[in-house]
Image (cartoon, rainbow, N blue to C red; front, side, top):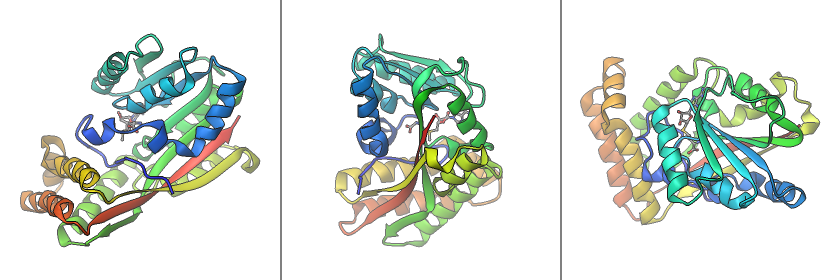
Length: 281
Ligand SMILES: C[S@@+](CC[C@H](N)C(=O)[O-])C[C@H]1O[C@@H](n2cnc3c(N)ncnc32)[C@H](O)[C@@H]1O
């Protein structure tokens, strides 16, 4: 089993510690052997990270493929683009990593430009995730790969189960499904395979798997709980959730406190499955 650091809920605090802890090792282990094999054949790999967010996975790509490789990160959110640029500069990777503002539905690249096209916890937030996958395939070279990993919220197991955590789970699922508009959503992980088949990828070109992450140490539980509590305490999520009439401010406070109490317990833990797909072009 793989232990990984991830959160796929919408409205997470921009670039929380949780997001910045993501690397290829903890969030992309499912395709690392394939990446190393491609790198052996070609030390000048070109990688695209779609919806790169805070850029820690993007930077991790650059370190993994080595100085002759090139990595491009794109995100629709200009604040994330700036943050990812800063991360690359901080890591001494500015020459190797380029970050651009772009929409995953319409990538500003020619056909067959990249050897590896990656996305992590982005499709869940899109209304037509299959179209994003098709666009990722368009910019992938023949012989290259498209790789995607998405969480599956209904596979979450948490101990202990408390009313505040149950309310949180329901709110996040509702918010994600509203944002996904019938496409992506809270259970994106299990749908990666159907989405790839829907756009005509032959089953023989697809490698599909599930990975599990969990948090059980005090350090990791604190990071996870802070990120979850911040989601319901921070202005935007709080305002939207209360305005929608889904919950009251008191409910949101209960959810935040529930995560804090959960983290403080020695016997608590949380786990979730992620769908992982490798598509060979
Ligand atoms: C949950 S974050 C994941 C970020 C990053 N991949 C990671 O794993 O740390 C989702 C990201 O997808 C971006 N995003 C959502 N829809 C997008 C779209 N249509 N085009 C490009 N980026 C998008 C958001 O701005 C956000 O940065």
